[in-house]
Image 1: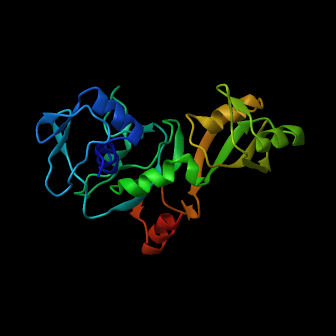
Image 2 (image 1 turned 180 degrees about the vertical axis):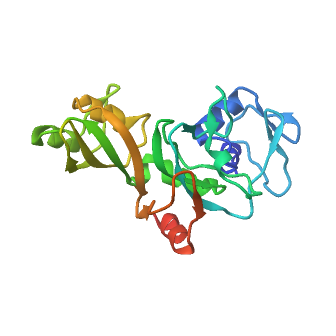
Length: 235
């Protein structure tokens, strides 16, 4: 297996970031610093270290659904005394990591696993896995703005892909929207809503593909069913 792939599948980081780690000399195979991309690793024999910490491919695969509260970051370490999602998962011996990210201020469905291959597929834009959100926004978008949203908006200098949006409830000064996108740009839903001048007040992810959050309480988690795991692997 190629080194950057091994690092990604171990859940350390994405494949692209893994390449950066290798080029910076932060990766070792059998205590030898490796700077060449594409170097081959034997998972059964070689010892791979990132920043002098050994990493391994987990043999027992774990698949978890968490209802992430606001105020938690989807990283494995706290860099600014932030609360991290891994602290919400108890009684799991295996090292797991978040599949993709949810903003600190966004709540809802977050998948966590030690299956790096599946995580890569679910987060890579080429697989076009839909993520569905419920957004409470300022005001009520009109038909013209909704059409514009669906066709794609220019965010950070680049057009977004086509998206799904509908109004589910209207209030006096706010409205509730259901939004589905398959991209995963930084704070994309918030930026798209701001672009059409209806900033997000609260945001919650309720589904990834056909995997739905359901009635899991905030801050709680459960294992995915075998059926749900098979579905994700079929995408």
